Length: 158
Image (cartoon, rainbow, N blue to C red; front, side, top):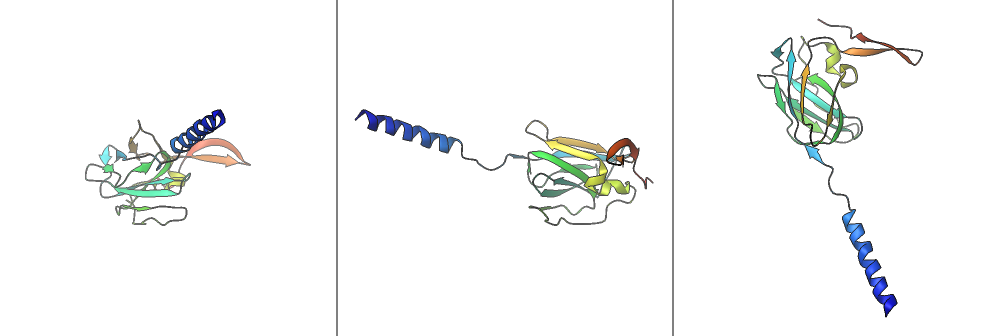
């Protein structure tokens, strides 16, 4: 009888542990912010968030004041940022395509690609607002023989 009671308690605790440890959906947050160029809003463009860790990508439109609100929550994590054209949208999963509209020509070309923009955001529960100034060319690493030599301005600054 004692063994049966212990077995029942152990089984009950095991079930509670399994239920308590089950994983729900990944936490996600709506992200907001503003993009400016020489103090003026970057209007009629878009801001692209791409998460290399999860393959999730999203484009939010910039309004007349350069402000944006993501059209859906971004999973918490690190994102590479680029400035694109204004067709907001989403793509999920590795290799998923995002809209590729024409980005504003007055913004340095390096800002059009998250890998060269130098812009990044780490979305957390307490950090959901990100403002970006794209006035100066981004600093890109100069690497020689696998070693970082210095951070140099990106080419093509207009």
